[in-house]
Amino acid sequence: MIISMNYKPFFLDTETTGTENKDRLTQVAYSYAPVSKANSTVELFKPPVPITVASMAVTHITNKMVADKEPFQSSSIYDALKTELEKPETIMVAHNARFDIDMLEREGLSVPRHIDTLRVARYLDPQGKIESYRLQNLRYLLDLDADITETVQAHDAFGDIVVLEKLFDRLFAKMQKQMDGADETAVLDEMMAISLRPSLIHSFNFGKHMGKTIADVAGEDRGYLEWLLKQKKENPTDEEDWIFTLEKYLT
Image 1 (tube, one colour):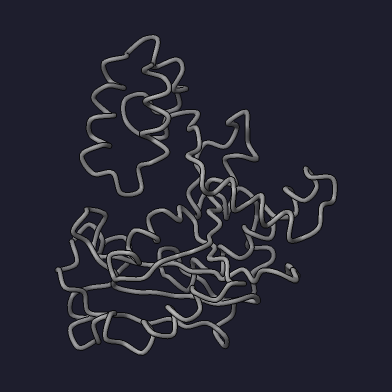
Image 2 (image 1 turned 30 degrees about the horizontal axis):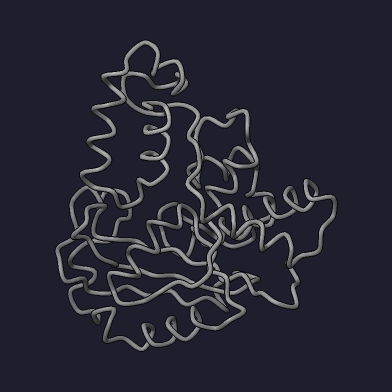
């Protein structure tokens, strides 16, 4: 467990109706360390828009499952989460945190401090050796299950914060080593600073150029990067890193 006089990592994950600008929360899970069923808050909510079939296929949360649930904004969990996020010592930890932050902001919540484990993982892999920074990919690549005692399911908010805590611990240890054994507060400050900056994506893990570096594609198929940048800008939620990367290689 990370001990800091100034901060308390607060692990959070959301499941949503989809990934478009109109989409909203369907499930939230959050916990301080150590993450377990006993000390985590996990709840479903009835969103103001229907859950897409694509989202149901990933999360297995259906419209029937949330039909009789409270809307998030009128729930007791909303007030409790708002209180925790506003505490000066709380650092929200999430994977691809910009997505979760956008979803929370749509519900009227703000996130003063956060650590994005995706951006930190990418920062600690400057050569781009990791093929995918998705949470479940890192779970198995880094053998995080060796430290997990809870029963977890991918794309379930509770299961994701269990894995998230283990990933965070691994990244923290690597960052602290890179910073020559700096104290916990200094390491957390640096992780927060990294999380605020767009990160450079090294290679494609989708599409016709899957496996190729962005630099190589910029040389051989510039038109594809221009098209992709236009697509990303049309739905910018969760796309800051891609927009930053594509603009860098197109200038």
